[in-house]
Image 1: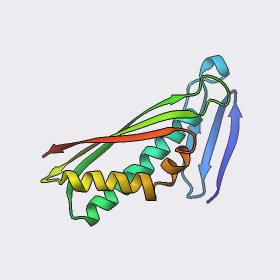
Image 2: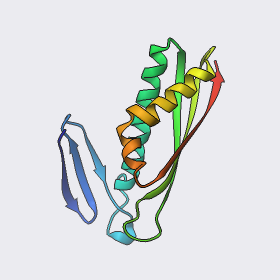
Image 3: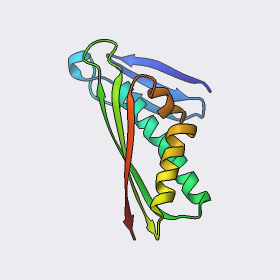
Image 4: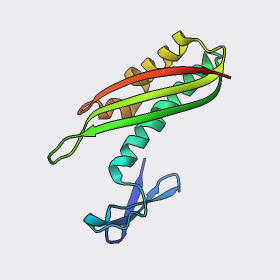
Length: 138
């Protein structure tokens, strides 16, 4: 896997993934940014959410669960002093579908957290990572 991050101006950077996709990173005005893009730490948190949600959906599909929507809401706390690593991350999954099994949803989240989600497991080295879920019917 490769990536490239190029400084534009102030605190703005253009990030290019090896897959060819790009996004803008920036900082707040008080740190020389213009608030034009994601903060790098926000991107880490979003990456964990996307990685975990991808796993959960894949596992639920293999379990033949009829999922019609899935959202993961993330909340994180950071250390007060440098390095301001994540110290706590909570992921709340909202899984919507027809006749969903709570046992299967719980299993999918557990497998992602303990076995498959590289981002979650990596961030878990410095942060307490917790999960919960709710199931909604369509």
